[in-house]
Figure 1 (cartoon, one colour):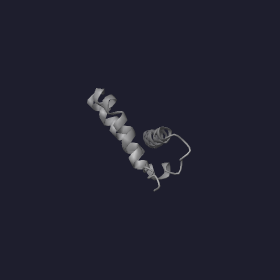
Figure 2 (spheres, rainbow, N blue to C red):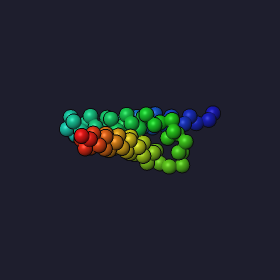
Figure 3 (cartoon, rainbow, N blue to C red):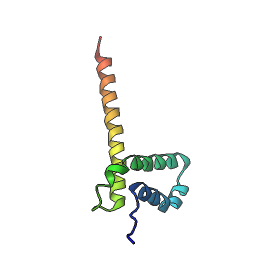
Figure 4 (cartoon, rainbow, N blue to C red):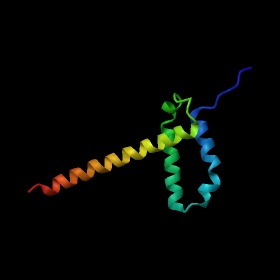
Length: 89
C-alpha cells in the first residue's frame, strides 16, 4: 500500500500544535496574533501545496508574511488617502 501524504492544512495544524507550549506562554493578546498568523497560513494552504520542495515551515512563514504584507499595503494605501484628503481645501 502507498503512503498517505498529509494535506498542507494538516501540516499547518501540526506545526501549530508543535508550538502549543510556546503559545501558552504568550500573553493573551500575543496568543491572538499567533492564532491569526496560523489562520493566515491555513488560508494559503492550497497554493502552499505546490511548493513541495521547500520545508513546510518555510511555506507557512511565507504565507504568514504574505498576509502581513497585504495588511501593511492596505494601511499604507489608507494613510495616503487620508493624507490626500487632509490636503484638500
